[in-house]
Length: 451
Image (tube, rainbow, N blue to C red; front, side, top):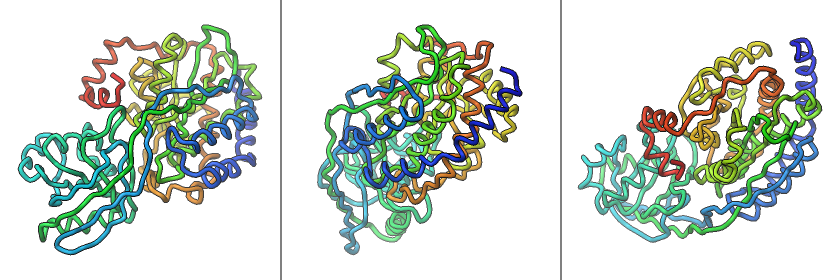
């Protein structure tokens, strides 16, 4: 299409998004009426029903739910007690896929920055409950919390207490397993309580007790898929994904209803122009992102015969005003250059950068050699309440959805109508293996059961 026609459609897209009356209603129905929607839960299935209906109304076709096996979680209250040098009960949450038990022991604060550092503190760790900062202060690029806790357990610890690294934030919850439980209990506390416990370890020899009863279980859940555009076999496909699940303690407005609502608004804006598409837009709303990318990983595995048709994957996860101005492109520098040129033509200020990050549902596509990208907040303005009870409808303004839906719909319009092939040749398994080795991240890929 000529640039003048694209500009005309841009105006229609932006008008559709900016005047949409649907965002607030859907946000409140899913966050407030349905509430938390962890993988495998009844509430998740209800949310799938609501989102599927919204996609059909927006103009998506072939909307269907695919059943997948998952390692689910039955959440239960947790208890963390300080038993010495005084008594106190702290508000806490049990991390997903950790052992259900009742243990006591001395609390030790260990600076966990590497396995080598753990070995230096091996005597202190053995038989103790280890206090460690949670995500937000990642101590090392390739040492996520899930691996840290397992390494702490290997060195004889009987439990772990993490504290929210963000000032004034309450307890945050994270998954520490994908296909099995961590062998010790692990709970999270607030930033204030964590700092209080750190101070206690400096001035005394505190003892604590962890009592948790959440349990893992094998169950089933749903991926939601749909399409916009031509559906002939062999057509090039662009995948747009946004996960619907959240953790048990939160209604997950920012993480990641923001992405799902933005996806729906993009569909609503693009559907009237599908006759101009040269590629198909595949919609994927996976489950289990918070439990280790299990929904997107299963989709890639089950649809492996279609992977050669997929030329690009774009992920919408945890969106705020900052993400509307940034795109991270994974292992695809030529695609990065094209996206940057494309965004410039739309008149949008958008910083497009190459980045390696193993943080969301684009990862299974990356590991299959497919070019991938995500909306990115380069200004570090992302709100700090993800994975806490504060991630609610009140803290997700409709304007944040609109700010993200407009530029990304404009980008996708151009990628879907571009007459020339996209620079997205699929990488071989050996090429992907070399990239993983260069990032020194093979262990984490294996933990996620992706490599």
